[in-house]
Amino acid sequence: MGKRKFDDDEIMDILREHQAGATVADVCQRYGVSEPTFYRWQSSQLRTVGFDVKRIRALEQENQKLKKLLAEAMLTAATLSEMLEKTSK
Image (cartoon, rainbow, N blue to C red; front, top):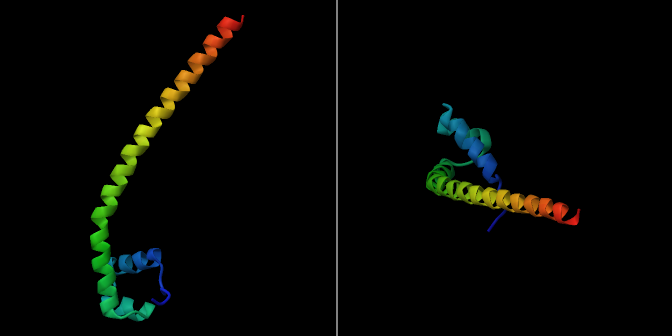
């Protein structure tokens, strides 16, 4: 398999340019890609949109759980620190 000419971010920028109103032919000519390649990128992007949304939601839920665990751990540490200060006096 050959080296890719465009990375994922560049492909997304090209697709956004088309969504902004540029024709497929103009976009393809500007970046030197064929129309079938453009449409393959477009269909690939549409398939991954649903996956990305699900993944983001899962990561947000995991982030909330981790924040809760961190807050509980910090509260426990603060409580133990206060108890230690009281018993050492």
